[in-house]
Amino acid sequence: MSDRLRSSRAWIGAATAAGLFGLAAALAGHLDLPLILAGLGATAIGGWLGSRGAAKSPPRPTATAPRHAVAEALLTHVPDPVILVDRRTLVVEANPAARALLPALHHGRPLSFALRDPEVLDSVEAVLSSGMPRRVALSTRVPLERTFEVQIGALPMPDGSGVSALLFLRDLTSARRLEAMRVDFVANASHELRTPLATLIGFIETLQGPARADTQARERFLEIMRVQALRMTRLIDDLLSLSRIELREHVAPTGVVDLGALARQMVDAQGPPAEARGATIRFEDGAGPYRVPGDADELTRVIENLIENAVKYGGGRIGVGLTRENDPRLGSRIVLSVTDDGPGIPPEHIPRLTERFYRVDVASSRARGGTGLGLAIVKHSLNRHRGRLTIESTVGEGTVVRVSLPDYGAAAAPAVLDQASAP
Ligand SMILES: Nc1ncnc2c1ncn2[C@@H]1O[C@H](COP(=O)(O)OP(=O)(O)O)[C@@H](O)[C@H]1O
Ligand SMILES: [Mg+2]
Image (cartoon, rainbow, N blue to C red; front, side, top):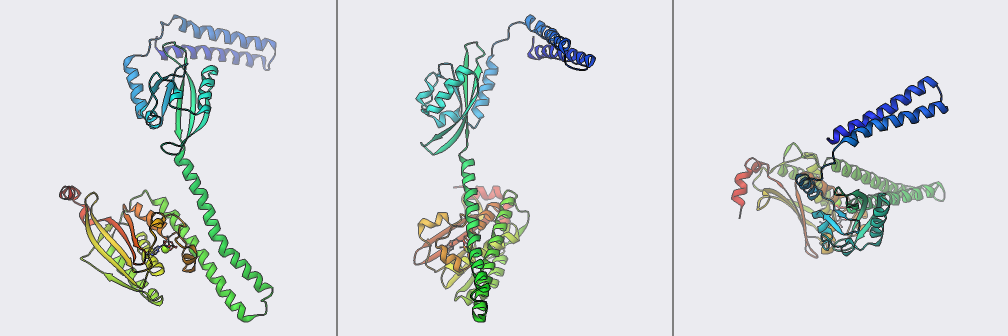
């Protein structure tokens, strides 16, 4: 008899019991002894009906080879480690993810040879003796620091050899890391907002108190307050841009823009304020147009951030240039470079510059109106545009920041390009 047939008989039994009990309840209108007796009787009749089918059914077929193969294939493709141990905690099965995490895991060997965590081992023993599932945390240090949640459940063996335990390890490392990043981010953002707020409150109190009648001081203080309020506005604008870009990060841009034209507009716009700071921007326009698939607003912000950084932290001579390059892996690319002859960036800082709020020198960034979010915004915009950012710098000589984006003109014939660029 098939499982379905057997279970339908059990359902008939349960439904009969429920039906008779319901009838009795409707007739009696309330719970009393005859009603309880009727309920018990109904359950007995229902159970008997259900078990009649089960009794007649032939013994359940043992696990067949094809089903075993399917189970094994399923386990192989589960990305999380799964381990099956028998009642003596000897390893019966382990999927590739489990063997990769615990290389000492071998069929027929005790689980404790590979997994030395006493809490997990004790829990496995407890599950095997009680049959009740358990959940424990597991941290590994080698080869990497990782955190897992181990779910342990009891599993009766189909061959009747008793109960075994199934360990399912859920990797919480990236979830924990994300959580830590989120907490850091909120703490950083609050701190960045609190500093100008504290200054504002301080000056307001001074103006209300000791400096009430001092017109000269009032003008000076109001100017400082304006600068601090503008800083908060910039910070909020940057935070909002960042979250908007992150929301769209997985949606490819649909437009096509000429990066050369955008760069020229930006150089024209930033030239006068740069000159006021004693810097000149030279634009080297090559053989345009430099068309890339992209969102004009976002790419304008990218170029603006890079030129602004060169003006703020770089030297007096800034160069903005465009070229077309052939990358062996990525095909034809449009490369925008922003070069300065400033003090440069010490190498240990370079990998961290795109982190939110990371600045080489916090005081100098703040003094120049920086929020520490510019390069984070650049990085997320470039992710969306399948772009790359590279920063090369030599202390005492200057910095070159390069942005490479897919060449729209070449995108029409990627196969030909790939062949041409193959080594
Ligand atoms: N061209 C550059 N030369 C020197 N340092 C730079 C340059 N560009 C960026 N930096 C450093 O990288 C940090 C992060 O830049 P960014 O994310 O744009 O933040 P912000 O400009 O708001 O400070 C800056 O604070 C600065 O220390
Ligand atoms: Mg910046």
